[in-house]
Structures are given as structure tokens and as C-alpha cells.
Image 1: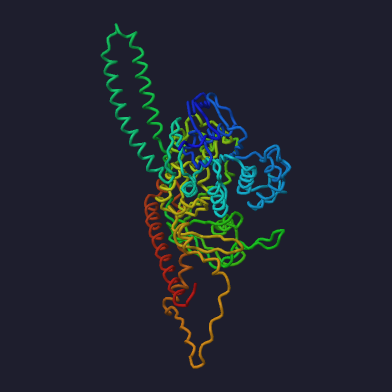
Image 2: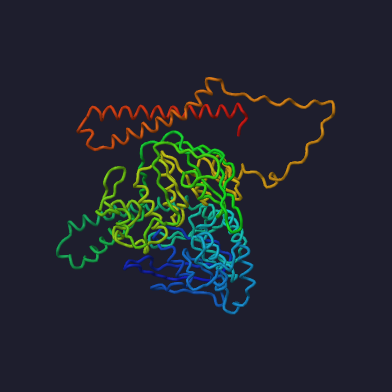
Length: 609
């Protein structure tokens, strides 16, 4: 049976960017019923290729074909709302010209995505903007959907809704996404853009890593043969006869091309070299939240964020925060880290905390700053990493930047490049508590793998807000689910574990009344509650004051040792202060461990939560 005719196709397409070929002689086709994904590293040209396929930009060479009468819908990474007064107007622009008056279709898709049409696009959050762009792509009932990072900024319920929509979609679908779970569900064919060439495979995305490894092994074998050939050609060049030099210049040029090919192979194998600067260890207990509640007053009335939530986060824990957009994940994060005070309950932060934060809105980046100024804000060309100076040009290479980008403004960078720049700045700072708010948006899958590896090896404590199910499953030790309306609960494990443990919807209904017992059956005696011994209770009562005193003594010693002249002025005092600091830190850790042990025992005996 012949394959279906393509609805949209590219043949022999070439695009040059900044004088450098991004890709040359590339062929690509999307047919009805296709469900394909386009993968490749940041900067490989995936978004550019999709823009050429959609007709948004013209190629420098080659041909684009679209079946007459076909509708192609394109979802860009960063939609342009500038010409539209309302969300309804923006979505309506996705209707074909003869159907512009069919407003009911706009209302229907906005309702499906739970998005008010009267809003100004300038007021939309990241998640709302992405839903508006999806609505515009879907409203025209297209024959082909080209979606560039459709899950960015979406919450998990919306991602799962979109998965169902696209699984049932009968047209041609081409996806760019970093969300493995999303691609595993939808992508039946994989297109890998690698070093300017498009490698197609009829295998689904779930087989991509195995296929990629096969390609790398074949490349390694080819590289070995290439090295042998270069060695032979170099020998010929050294022993060549000058009389034959002219007619053999073609062979010399071929040797130079071999070297270029080899360099490209080496370049293609480069990976980001992420590493985190780590501070001194924090105390054993990092965050303790006890019966915390918070409600905000809004125009629609009170909005509870959290009600009666209790948790203890210990050094080395990796905690994932999940929930719908607007449920209050970021607010809860700020409550847990002491940035927002709860209405009731208590928050206690551990000692010696050095915190770094990744902000999903990239508000910490000035669009007019250059990469150099972001990493060296006080001038010069050195970045301090783990207390050691590194030249900024070498440091940015670890994050897959070209040294020619050093003086490029932030506003000229792609979304993935901005995220990598934030990570580069953040990872240079020593820390033992890392807060990551949606770090995976716009990162390619290879960089995501490396980020996951680095975070897994991080010795500090991690708080991670993410909608990437696979990333959560691979990384976190427990999950805090912010369900909305103040409902917050913690579950062991990652996202898949949360799905297995969370209460079924019907569990929230009132339980049926128990049957009446026979009159002659005596009710069971209540289980007596125990309590700590007098000695243990006294120790538990005294420990908080002892931990507070130790914390103050540690802070005073750290301030004294921070004096750079102390060692020269009084070496004996410097040595004694260092020894005492170590002893106090050890004592504080032991006190925290003992407090946790006694508090857990007390709760167990008294039948607490």
C-alpha cells in the first residue's frame, strides 16, 4: 500500500543563519494521520525548520509544497498578541478568511480551554498565553498542526487534556517538545535534526534513546575510519612529489574537507557541562512547617491557598511541587522559604542555609544586558565558581554557548538559551538549598538529561516546581500536591507515585453511616494514648533553646573567621575558632537529629498526624 500523499512538504531546503548554514538540502513531509516529533539540541534549527514548514519564513533555497485547500496551523513558542484587543480577537484570527464570522467556534474552543475571551492578551499569565495560542491553532479545524513546545507553562490537567485532544486528532501532527511523557504518548515517528541533517525514523519516540545510541555507535565507527583515512592522506602529503603538486591540489582540498568533517563530528558530540557550586552543609532540618494556613482576599472573595499543612524537609530531600496553574504552588514555596508569612501555623528554617532560585519568568534577566554582564555584573572577565575564578568565555562553553555570543544581548537569545544562561549564573553561586520554578521549559532533551544528573548528585536540598512528569519521576523523593481551594498534601515518590496514592474522587464523599451494633455487643474500649517519659519530655522541651543558642554561636564564629586578617594577626585564635566552629556544627546536627527523633516518638505515642 502506497504511503499517503503529503499535505505539506519541503524539498532540498536550505537556511543560512549569521553566514553559517543551519541546514542544507533538507527534505521533510507531513501527511494526514502522521504523528511525528522533531527532536534535536537547542540551536540545531528545530524552530526555524518548523517556521519554514508553516510558511512563517522563507527558506534560502529549496521548495515548499502545500496541497491546495489545505489548512496549516502553527503554534509558535512566543505568540505575538500585539495587534489584538482581546483574547477572542486573537483566537478568531485563526479561522480561515471565509469563516471569520463563525464566532461560536471561537467561544467553543475558549470554553474547552477555560479561557475568558474578553481579557486583554497583555494581562495573560504564561499558562493563559499558551492556552490562547493553542485555541487559535485548534479553532480553524486544520489539516496539519505544527506545535512548537505546546506544553510550556501549561499545568498538568491542561497537558493531559491536550494529550487526549491530539491523540484523537486525525490530521497531520508535528511536535517539538522537551516533555518525554507527552512525546511517549503521541509521537509514532521521530525526526532527528542533527548537525544540519534530518535523520528520519519510523520508530516512536519511546525508542529514540536506543536509536540515538545506535547512530552514535555507527558514527564512532565511521569516525575511526575517517581518522585512518586522514592519517593516510597526511602521510601522502608529507611524501608527495612537488612535480605532481598542481594536479594533486584536489586531493589536498579533499584532506582539508576530511578534517572539517572530523571537526563537525567532534562538535556534534559536545554536551553541556553543568556543575553546581555547593556551600557548606546546612543543618539536618531545613524547613519545618506546622499546621500552616494562608488565604488571600480577592475581588471574588477569599481564596485559600493552604489549610493546616504540616511537613518537615530535611537536608538532601528533593521535593516536587505540582498542581494546576493558579492553585498556589509558587505562593506555598514562598511560605515554606519564609518570604511570605502564613496566617496561622509556624515556619522554622534551618541553620546555615545558602539559597539560590531559578525564576521561570526570567525576571532576573535584563533584556539589554549581555551574556558577559549577566555573568560578570561587576566588570572584568572572570566568573567565581566554587571559589575559583574562571574566564567567562570558557565558562559559557560548558553551557553550550559560542564565545562569539559573549556580547549578545539577552533579548537576542532563544528561550532555551535564556534558561541556560540563568542556570549558568545560578550554578556559579554556592548553595545548599536550591529552588527551581519550572526549569525545564525550552531546554532540549540532552540538556534535561544532564540537568537531572547534576540535580541527582546535588548534596543540598531541592524544591522543584514542575509540570514535567518524567522529570519529576526521575528526580524527586516526595511530591507536594497543591490541589486548589487550600487542599495540600504530601506523597512519597514522584508523579506516578502520586497518581497511585492520591484519594479517589469518591473518597471525598461523606462515608455511609455505620450499621447499628446488636444491643448486647459492648463498644470497643478506646485505645489509650501514651506519652513521653518525664526525662524525654524535658529533653524535648529544652532542645529548641539549645539549637537556637548553637545557631547564634555558629553565626558569631563564622563572622569572626570571615575576617581575612585574623589568621595573620592571631593564628592560634584562628585555629581555635575553626575547631570550635566544627564542634558547634556537629553538636547542632546531633541536637536536630535528637529533636526529630523525640518529636516523632511523641506524635506516635499521642496518636498525632
